[in-house]
Image 1 (cartoon, rainbow, N blue to C red):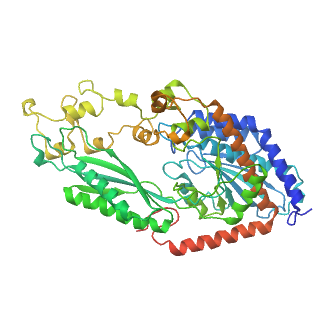
Image 2: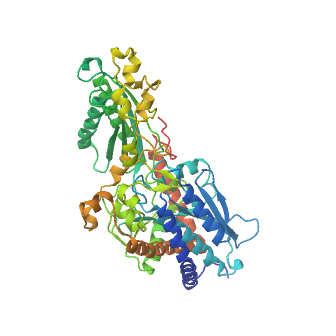
Amino acid sequence: MALGSQSRDKRMQFKHNIGICIDKFKDKLFILSQDIWSCPELAYEEKQSHDRLVRFLADNCSWNVESHYKLPTAFRATWGPFGGKEGDRALHVCFLCEYDALPGIGHACGHNLIAEVGVAAALGLAGGLQTESAEDFPQRIKVTVLGTPAEEDGGGKVDLILAGAFEDIDVVFMAHPAQQDVAFLPCVSIADVTVKYYGKASHAAAYPWEGVNALDAAVLAYNSLSVLRQQLKPDWRLHGIIKHGGVRPNIIPAYTEMEFYLRTPLLRDLSDLKAKAEACFRSAATATGCQVEITYPNHSYSNILPNTTLTQLYEENGRALGIQFEEVPSNFLGSTDFGNVSFIVPGIHPFFHIGSDALNHTGEYTAAAGRTGSDALNHTGEYTAAARRTGSDALNHTGEYTAAAGRTGSDALNHTGEYTAAAGRTGSDALNHTGEYTAAAGRTGSDALNHTGEYTAAAGRTGSDALNHTGEYTAAAGRTGSDALNHTGEYTAAAGAEKAQFYTLRTAKALAMTAMDVICCPELLQKVQEEFSVAKLRQDQRTKELDITGTDTQ
């Protein structure tokens, strides 16, 4: 029987079979999620998570798995084609996985659960299709799981777009953990800007007039941006940090570095906010006599295009499973590289409750998304991923070195970098500019050394600052504990992990059921595609400053 006009009862039977297939894998899926949670890895470094997901799909299912797909830590697993006629183009349905973690705080955004949702939904859909005869499906069908790294930092999905990974996909699905169940949140566009000021070092007490203070430039820019907020639209956001503010109180800072995120609801507004922010950065350089360098090191993320048909189908399927959807919060201003995908392929990105009121990017959310790790993980904020350490307090503590021992580090080098005439050393202006060298070790300090003085842990990524940013817990989470608990993030998560598992698999079922609706009803697929074309056209007509891959065209 052809499914183009399939009865609702028949489709409900297919959906029931999806749930049975997902439940069959629930224990293995739980272990998969916990394995990823227990080994948090930063963007583009998700080697163990990549290998674990690839192995899971290769071992447990009849999937064609491609590891290191277009990116070192991306993968693609495909099932089918199924049904239809040999040689016909297959309807290609794709489920996305994320699995990168946050520095110092681990999976505080629940990406281990996103990976589990993507895999579970794909297994459920493929299993549900196989319960029927292939002859019953006039349209050939292919199901893919696409592993997308680096959502938290860098934009792995944008890299995959540029590499052509989405070119043959018709509909894409993923879901993100949050504090409530919401079928659609628009998210907002975002640009990540790095600002570096270059001044001139001098003794802060003896010869301050010889220096050019790069920290003054950073502080002036920071304050200018704070003042600018009064004139910004209510739903525009800019927020940032001073990553490097100098080396010693008695040295006029010759180098400072800032990082800011700029967010607007629509991509077309992002260039306006960028222009305003850049004016603050440049004016601070002019006022202090510093040189300034402004770069956008990562891809910009777009807002998410809505697709009403997919949203309504997901809500209908979710309610059938007992999901109670909340009103769309008016103050949600998160960002995701799925927004860029939504301009390439029609899709849906719902949010799902995991049984905890903790907020994303907090230690409490890490606990809710998985189980506790070792005391070292909780107490020091340092996790080990494939023998790699994140930047940690322990690293800071031992990073101080002496020139005589030939060890590198910032504090001792900076302390001894002020040369004395009695030592018979002379320093050029360039040497003064960097403020670092040691005659005993025969090494010269450079501006580059200052620039990279924020140490990294084997992956070349800073750890401590991001930890500070995410380590703030929220009382709204309703958790109590001692100061040690709040400060170090030590907690118990066994119960939270079990709750999260239930909600995660329920969401996976709702996604797979929505995909089944699109497969069984060509008219629904056509409506999804028409909505996508119209929404994209509207955005494209109004977006001239940035192209949709997030590349600055100015």
